[in-house]
Image (cartoon, rainbow, N blue to C red):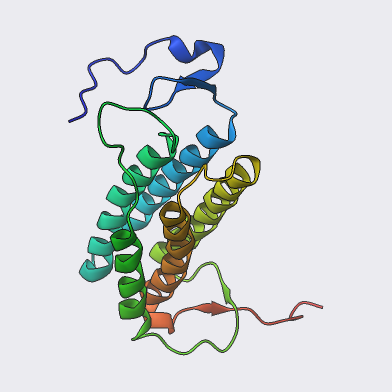
Length: 191
């Protein structure tokens, strides 16, 4: 259980932050950037959920994703070679599999795509498209970590964030009246 009695500690005033292990890194480090972007993704999902109360199936999926994003943040905040007195929280294949099932469930009812979709439509869809782009940035940051230090991110964590952006795309279309209210790209329309 997490207990937070004090919100500020002043330890980060020097530009550093602590990982789960207690090791301190600069707040600009790739690892901190990646889990910070996961936190940002979670915040955007919270905004999207303000507009999904009339879509209970989607809202429940987004609630599960918000919890998973905290798991992913904990995973990224604990280096893979960390020695801890407890088993580190890691993203597992079952979480990736659940996302795939939920993508398929939402996608089954969508209008077929006839063009690329512009971010927008309704408020929920617009926020879900924003979540998609922020999660893609998190994925790029995770890949950058791997490029610098192979094995820095687990295969399951990387698969989860890759699938997550796909989920947000399909969820945005689902929120847009199952694709009927999508805003479609018209190539060269304003030439």
